[in-house]
Structures are given as C-alpha cells and as structure tokens.
Length: 215
Image (cartoon, rainbow, N blue to C red; front, top):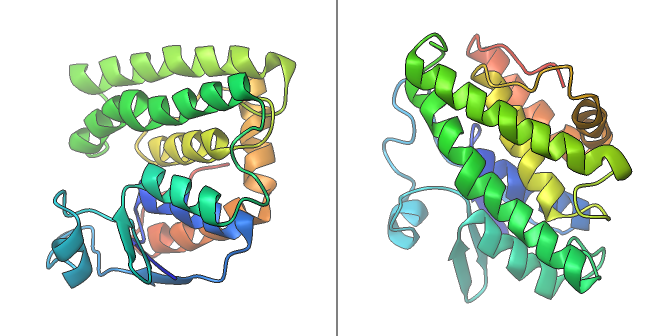
C-alpha cells in the first residue's frame, strides 16, 4: 500500500494520521512541492488518477483512489480495528457530518485565507475569520460534554484538527476563549499519530520560514 501525499497538504495529513492511528504498513510518498511553484510539475500518478490534480492518492493493488474521505472509508473497511467511526449509529452519522463540514464548509473560509496569502486585513479575509470564529464557537459547545467531537475518537476529530491546524498557519487560529476547543486541540496534538504528522509538516514550514502553529 502506498499513500501519495504532499508536504503541505491538509487532506494528505488527514490520510497520514488515519494510517498511523490504524498502524497500517503503508509507504508514504511525498510529491515534489515548493511554495513558489506548488505542485508543478505534477506527479505522474496525480495527473493520471485525479481529475482535480490533487493529493492524496491511495494505491493498494487494484485499488487506486483519491480524496481523503474516500481513503478514510477504504481504510475503515479493510482495517476495521481500531475503529475510527463510532459504533453507535447516531454518533456515526454525527461524525460523518462533522467530517464533511470540515472539508466542505469550514474549508471554504480556509481557501479565502489561502488566497489572501497571509494578508488577514482584507475585508474578505476578515469575513472568513469571523465565519471561522462562529464555527469554532459551535465546536467549542460540542466539546463541553466530552473529549471528542462525536463521542469516541473518530475521523471527525482528525479532519477538524487538520483544518484548524492549517488555518492557524494562515491567521485563522481559534481564540483562547474557546477553552474546550483548546483542550481538545491539546489532546489531539498529544496523540503519537498526530504529532508524528505535524512534526514533519512543521519541519517543512520552518525550512521555508513560515511560522509553525502553537498547538
């Protein structure tokens, strides 16, 4: 099995953490990437397999898939233990929705900050940060009664941690007032699967003169 990821890919980091959490023997290949030229020229497998021309990709014999959520699903079916979707039907539905919201709702504001390239003073960036803040407040409320987003530790936690961690690089970190969210971030950062992945990304950021998130 091989995961093709990138040194600064939020979605690649999601897949890397999931693989590490499950203890899967999987080769991790990082495609060429620079802050100046990004993913140009494209890795041949990325160009061949993903119409969006993005990482991550998972290659496992006849299976060749892209998209971090699809990779989550494949890993969960092939390696059911330890489970990373909650067993309870209601909790599982909640976890799936939260994972989707990280990727499709929160990520829209993240993209705005990416476009702003560190200039958080623009009206667009300020609106994105305000939108993120409202979502952080919502998640902080979810964490009042438990350690994890959907009861047990799940893909929802992995997805949202990656989203918040990468948003922090661009000036979209949660405010300290969200103390339940801050405690959850610390719990996440202490997990070996998470810290191993963020340390690799942090090394890339440091090499390129980009501040590393505090969590």
